[in-house]
Length: 318
Image (cartoon, rainbow, N blue to C red; front, side, top):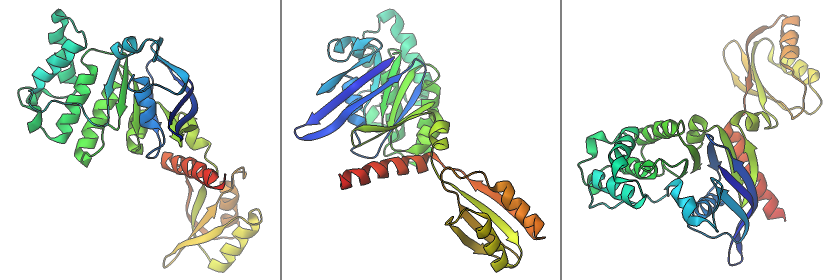
């Protein structure tokens, strides 16, 4: 549905995109992640026909975004970061207006608007002026205008920005529903939206793609990690024997002491062989009590921070 090849965009001497490439298949829900200024919105604006690229090429649903810009716009729905609404119009009037300019035939308009209203949960507010709505409902109206013509591809740029926690949950559920019927590219820096809704993650930073894969793939590739174990036994002896068991230089620290046990943390280096069983055998062999043994799992936030900070540090040293 989307093909991007060596896409570039420059603003004067500033290079917002530095030759990024990726593709999106039909039915995928893509989380397009990155810190502020990473190039997310620039990419979205190029793919939706708002900006011309400085180099490379991109196509949506088989249409080149430069040569066939109008054809691209016919087959996409777009919710920009600033929701495009006319506050003086009623919700139903606004959606009819959007259906008109999107070319939905008169015979299909009623059912198309009803579908958008139902999907976005707007039944209670269709007769209200948009200016009277809460920000959460305004975001829903923005999503409804993006889907009223039933496009195969949706671009959602920061759809939960500025919403309160309850509104964020509501919009997140809506995005999950939309992902069942559309190919979706969701640009955000809220990782929970991606974790809940997306089948694949692309992380961009300083105009380059630093990661592309499923959440499971990205988390599995994150080096390091840690083990936490709680042991009832002589503290100094336990600590000394844990350090002796591990490769030289492996950090072992004490997290917490309680009345009858001590929590130890072992920082596992990348490539280190699994040591869970070895530590358990050590504790049992010495007659100590193993109360807990738990491996810390990397999260998408860990991956995001590691990759974006790494690029920033490399840029500083370049």
